Image: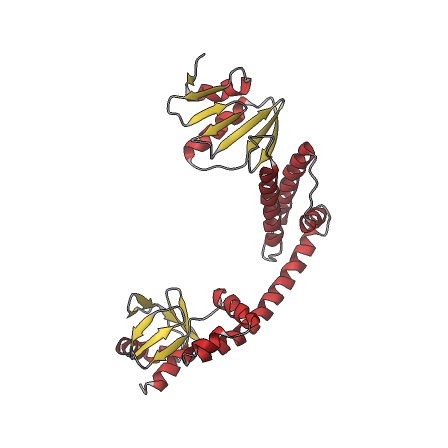
Length: 308
């Protein structure tokens, strides 16, 4: 039986399910049994099961996108069930089910988070997206007679179907923002406790900090609003940042004097070199060098310590 076909034919041969396998001459579109693949077993495009087709929601390269389009055209007469993970081995679907439901859950939560942004005016398109996600999830679960066990996801589905979806999303965003700000303030206080010990090289005391303080420090340090802090290493005569950058005192001094009046005001379009970094600007409270936002009070702390 013929096994190699033109690329445009492969999907149609697969859709007929009259033979077990086939491929194109480039070997990048092929089918084995009920499943058709692009480039390899890592990317199943679709699986036929009777009049139903489990069809991928994913896409990668331009070539794969063309393969997906060809497969889609070949089964236009069948019932499509959209999925993130295409079922292949129907006796072993526990992981496939888990991945699919998780992806739909994350997609719905992402829409809910977007709707929480009051700046978004086009709420209807987000609501439509939520309905599409729920539709895909429910179609899949109904086919396999799967219950949605995750309580948070069940509640979110019910909420999305209610007229209060946008209102509740914005209330949730306000609560999340307030909670984040509160935790940031706590984190700032905990981080300052750590910085005071770090500046005195009290490694053992840092090690013995309570877990709650450490967690708050990590939250604060990993947040986009956190600062890079400075200390002075007298033994090595250098400034050190809380992100591990080591700056010889002479280089730090040159940068300090190059800043001139910019420590007392905001300055843009600066180009002051510091090792592999460049101080690009200063704000009212900090100077910016790449990914580092350094409080001006820390710069002044070093300058006062070294009597610049």
